[in-house]
Image (tube, rainbow, N blue to C red; front, side, top):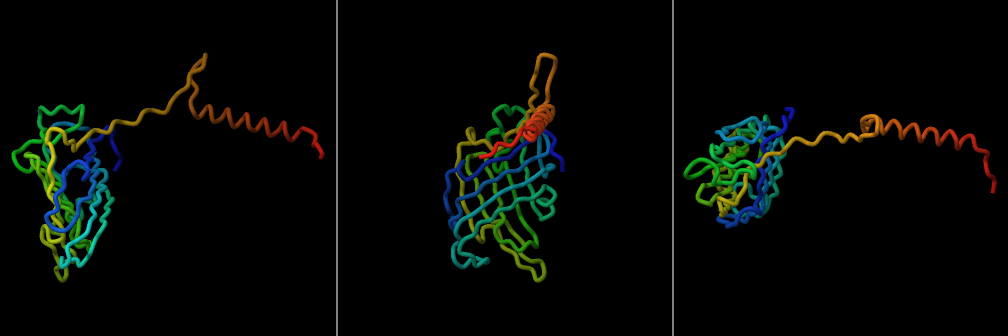
Length: 224
């Protein structure tokens, strides 16, 4: 998918929250999701996504279905891959949200859970893809989703079988979404008679180097 600038970027990490481990010790995560549209008020349920990059890591309580002692999950994929594996995302930006400084949690609509990223995976052999939920009251949770490890014979984990981590934050000062502006155009340097582009400068430099080499070749050799 080709990115249309500017685009909406969901960006936050465990550094934005106060962490409390409920089950297992999983307290490091980060999430980046590029949504293929400018930042605007409205309802977003599985919007067009350019790319998803998220990570979750920590140690796991003995006896979980995976049998792992620790894990470091890193997932990088396109939006099509994200949805095809069984994942989803939903939130609503309030009509009165001030978008110039991004979207804080208190600018999302709803009483209760106002942001959900369910990175559930079906049939990919993974136990730890995450379900992350943010509540309007300044709390949240990240835990393993109800991932289907293999479909035949069915092997599945329930929510929180591997890890559960509670989150606390200030809804008015926790930014979840920003807009990434279009990159600036390449610089153009002006001379007295007009503009010279970087391509033109490259050509001039190449010609100067060529002239230097020719002059060197024409000079008599100097012996020691």
